[in-house]
Image (cartoon, rainbow, N blue to C red; front, top):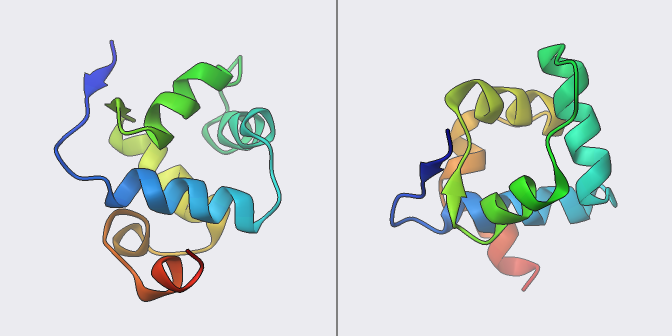
Amino acid sequence: MRKKAINNSNFSENLRFYRTKNEWSVQELGEKIQNVLQLEAAYARNTITDWENNRYEPPMAVIIALSQIFAITVDELILKHNECEEQK
């Protein structure tokens, strides 16, 4: 079940920022999440796109996995950061 996004676009902006900073496609990021969480299948591209467009938020386990994948803290992923603002 997908959880509706909270009224906070920081996570979605940061997710897109760190994904593109690493030059990964949405599909590549889905595969990385799959590997970290040892899932049978990767997250669908449209699911990750929904996260990036602030339509839905991922489960906490995915947020933690994303912070590991990007080598950042969970706070850096969900809070507003100057690095993301400077790239706009």
